[in-house]
Image (tube, rainbow, N blue to C red; front, top):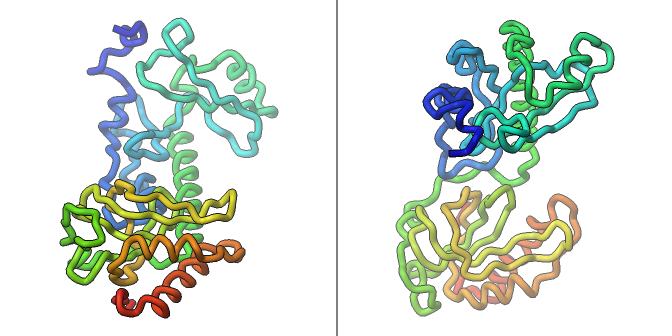
Length: 292
């Protein structure tokens, strides 16, 4: 048993209690990254600090991270702070979970400043009273919601679409051009993967589970189009279905030969428009576009 476990057995671990009291919401299969992040910021009623004892002032809870206020408040105007991570009981780790302390270093409140210099994860929870903690956590949740709203407005594409029944039903087992994902061809679509907009052509497998597809996306550093062939992809956040194309290799050839225009935030969108225009003009017999 890890030495830190001696301090908090699992059945009384405060972090486990907080995670249980503020569970991560279910992610929607077809939602964007910003929408799923927005669900992780608890509403004001849901964020009731009295759900646990001692009180918990939760700012965000996701599948991997729980953020909450503890001990010292991040008072307004504080720009100096430490980020501390303790490893092991001898290094002042008390709770047996990986976690970080963000410790403010205010310059105008001596009674807090003097304590904070020697705290580094050690301190009394009652240094942050319930009223102050609830107010500060509410303000931080408000700021997070504003940041999520900026993320949404920054997504130039349309909101994720509900996938067509055709897309859902794709379940071929071959990745050969002789066995397209439907009798009419392979679905070409735009999706959001880990915050990056991608152009994809489906190869095989059910699209509602992990499946194979060729993925094309803009490398923000080089300005070039990256190509991930036969990528095993989880169900994407669908943005737009463009149509069906019968030749996977020809599709890749067209994508990689197109010049990437330098149009700032619209570079990928402009490149994708070129690709679809070439397919329409040069491969009409192999292309069955959707009306969007």
